[in-house]
Length: 320
Image (cartoon, rainbow, N blue to C red):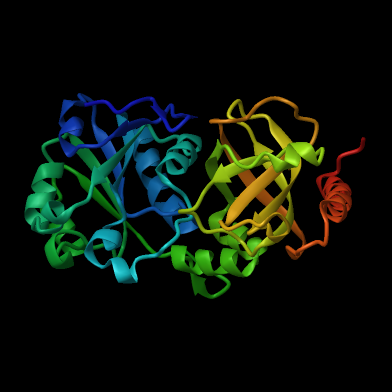
């Protein structure tokens, strides 16, 4: 029943379960935060905090119950967000920092979608559930018939905590609001609503290795499913698998000078010579430097890359 401790190269101390039945095998009281937590923004964090606080106060395990894939991707793909703020691996790592003991990524399919709210809750309560924390307007079950009132009516063995929406600057924080901010390049607002700087995670894949010939080796990072900021050259901070943090410069876009035909994120880490292939990296976008552009020759491109690197070092506060 236990999921792998390693997922796609990430070390995940948070235990991950894929099936609701796994929870019934846990012999301690469970304090659960429930919802769809793309991005784990400040609103989501408020719900999770209630579950972890209950676990600390009463004893037992704190857990997050979410769905994978995102329910709307199954029920209404045309309306679903095409890009996510955090994939499952990233969510697990963030939950670790919040003191969460486990994550149930309940597989969402048409069978689960047709499950009545009562049956959904009955499955959940086969485990030793002591706390359920939700956003106050969260709904669940077939045709979203389950709500706060149903959970309250069934409460008895467990306590229900319904958390009001978190508001900042007169706006309700939401994943869609943050996606819009990231897409437009307003990473300051995105960080404000997330409660942390925005970053993307992805595995390093093999590219054309052209950067090596230009004296500027880059790591090509697979992050196609994640929301990215505007194309261009960026100063970045990169966190390696071993959690070292390095300054760097990144190109996000199509690489027109070398005939690129696929959107990509390529990152050069300052002061790093080791092979990063197959490692999973986190890239934090610090500051946009310039638009992506086409150069007349590789020599012109190389000269501009040098200038971009120097600009990024200033932003990253790196002294040679």
